[in-house]
Image (cartoon, rainbow, N blue to C red; front, side, top):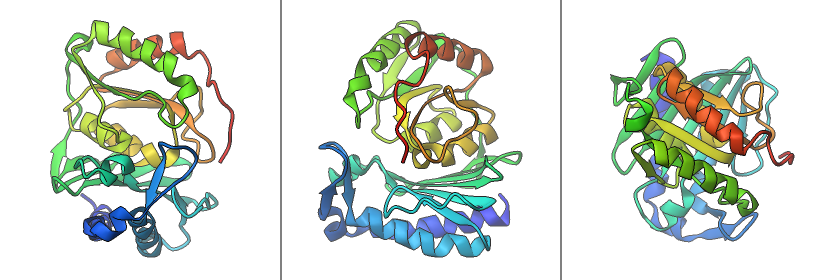
Length: 268
């Protein structure tokens, strides 16, 4: 791990202490719809990371899920999800992570995802490898028939649930099993670590996946924002990922058969 990656991980670990404050967990508001929550811990972690991270790279900017921080003007851009899996966090399910991605000249560069309940620090730097608690990790070599799929059903816009169910059914019939953990960043970190093999979600934002994007590339996997050129910072998009090129191509074929184009066009 490089010195920069270690410093980012240390800051993220420090920020996780805010998640242990039960009063901040209990202060909940809704945003967007009845399934989309934000807690005082979310905003507290966002503020902490926004204060600490830019000092590592002068001139870097912030794109964050909370507090409307959407400055994508820098060559280096921190993309922050203070708590990915907020609904899990509110219920104390132990399936929530802090996710920090660093974009360099428009491309995913570094990813840090911390699972405080398990004290698991996933880190990746494109070109230099991926790590779990300082030990190297790599995607698995399982074929499609022996793969686990992580997916979701477009929770924040259920108009798109039907093609999600269709895709899950098609993949499930040809693979081993399905997992649904309620945190895109955690599920993708598990893919980078070789614990699951396939991933699809209909509608995510950059803060959900920026850290994992860099990590999966660093771990030897494949990931793509469907129907996009690169990683959009200003709009939602569908995403797929897989452990091997063969599995990625097969998953993409199934997904595109149900989602030949992005079925929405909203911007942040």
